[in-house]
Length: 252
Length: 215
Ligand SMILES: Nc1ncnc2c1ncn2[C@@H]1O[C@H](COP(=O)(O)OP(=O)(O)O)[C@@H](O)[C@H]1O
Ligand SMILES: [Mg+2]
Image 1 (cartoon, rainbow over the protein chains, first blue to last red):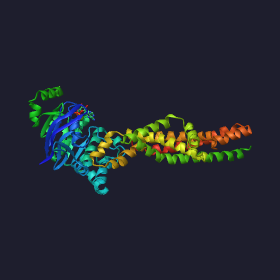
Image 2 (image 1 turned 60 degrees about the vertical axis):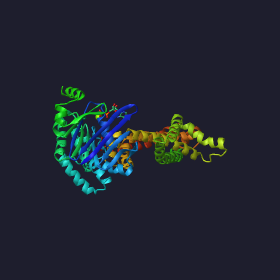
Image 3 (image 1 turned 180 degrees about the horizontal axis):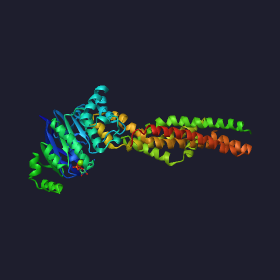
Image 4 (image 1 turned 45 degrees about the vertical axis):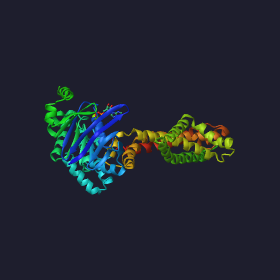
């Protein structure tokens, strides 16, 4: 079953065409890594899929709900109710965490379940405690984000996203803002989620990680999906010249 | 004139000073929010109209604004501004609301876009994002500039004497010229210092209270 389906997606900022005819789908339990040089449109793709950016044309579908579709050659966007429903399907982990600095770790996690899902405070807090335990942060519930290391903040932001039980979780370079010695913690958490068959789309520069954790790797360049397939094929045996040169530059 | 007689006269003036201060403060705090909303409106004509208004109010002296509000209606519409105090309050409220609105706007715009985006992908409504995520952070950020502005208001109340409202400076000036004594001027200086001192302590206290997180 496909959780997410993207077809012929286009997006331009002014005259700068950033996404060109992007099509991809993600099925339940799948882990997809998106790699590619900076500026190739990876973040924009994730941002279009998570309603932070409005695509120009094409199709994005979660289950049976269309975020955008083309009907009689006209682009149709989801209305407010569908948008709300769609936002329930996914979670997004930002590169720079975007935790709420004025709320404790606990409240960062429970705020949305309480005010969006209408969960009771007690229920939300006990679920948040579970998530914190899983992230190895049981003792940080009352801390404020500014008191945590980058790695800890990113784990809180993953817990915050998971608290809404998303069907698919997006990561935009979750380790890029971290000191190298802290990236391991985050990658371990994502690996853990993969084992539990969480559906994930991960934009990353950690090629080794992409190779070992993902079911599929997508290589983007210049707004196109240049190559996509099993991680061993795309990473160890790329067929496209651009993929080859990108990977060889990274491995240097 | 004895010390106690001077004190009594000055207290009369101080009453007017306090009155101008508190009425201006409590009216312009909320009015400033309205101006902020207009100023940040996506409806361009309203936005530009408000920006022009803000530019005029901030680009001209408060003293001039007080004079215009007092004499303007009489000269333009032939209706006399009845009360001098009303003219002062109108000018002060408009002026301070405008300054506050710019502080509010600066505070709102200083909150990183990522905070809105995080709220949005968590499914929060625009309203929830504003009131639960943005506003609490704005309040912490604007307390220091608001404190400065409010302390300036204490001293600006003395501008009311340009249209002969008897506030603290006017009261002292009258005594000084009638009695040929200088010390009431220093005496009222103490009034202002104490008033501003109390406010400084209050704002430091609020800042400390809001210091439970950095940023
Ligand atoms: N909000 C924006 N406004 C204008 N241009 C943008 C915006 N966001 C991204 N871009 C442009 O889109 C292109 C792709 O950016 P991005 O999706 O961030 O790439 P990546 O994540 O692969 O590094 C870049 O040229 C970038 O300058
Ligand atoms: Mg990016």
